Image 1: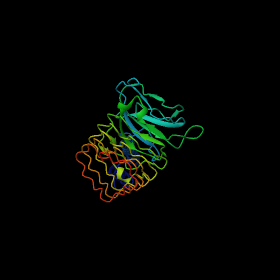
Image 2 (image 1 turned 120 degrees about the horizontal axis):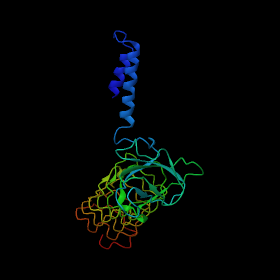
Image 3 (image 1 turned 90 degrees about the vertical axis):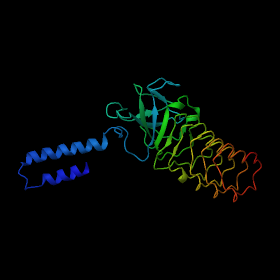
Image 4 (image 1 turned 135 degrees about the vertical axis):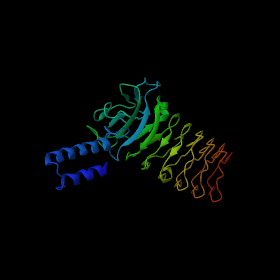
Length: 292
């Protein structure tokens, strides 16, 4: 479409062409309209959700009944003052929130109107009134765990709680950015019991320097194989069952600083594909290594 636009611009000022200026201008604007439509409003593209690197964007399947009815989704967040946008995937133009929705209650329910798959973009910066306090997404406490499908952008929210425990249809994240975990101490059971979890793009770039617990982080998530080779876990004290029952995980933990770890119980228990190099680990603070 960019080629068409450039060609139409050239065509407008091509004085060797015999068509009149009115016809040329009409064609030029027609091409421009087509370009804008295909760029911003084509099927699958975001139409109602602003293109904004600050937004936390994820997709849910609201065609099923869980804690909420089909056509609805309960936000797994105790934050009480922020705004969001939503749109139906594949039907972005005709079925959307028509602008921002002001969220003023914890675990607020979004009513989409009709069952379907929906994209939700949460703005952690702007809000109609007061101070935006969006900082949590805790699927562990949600009744709509099965409706969450994936995350496509982490945005700039400074997380205090981020958890996907028990999201049985959650396939992971395909974002090019990383979550801000500078205020997170516990990633306990973050991805526990997520049997569909496969996509963990960019997880090797996560900054875990503030985290003190990775207890059961990937426990019983059989398909996941995260790159954790570059993680800074120098503040972590609890690694128990971190990769327990992951089955396919082959984590590279050879460069980990484990000097603060006190609990290594069952770190790789049931992780039958794992063959970790732990020869360089500092275990001087460890008091439990049962079934490591």
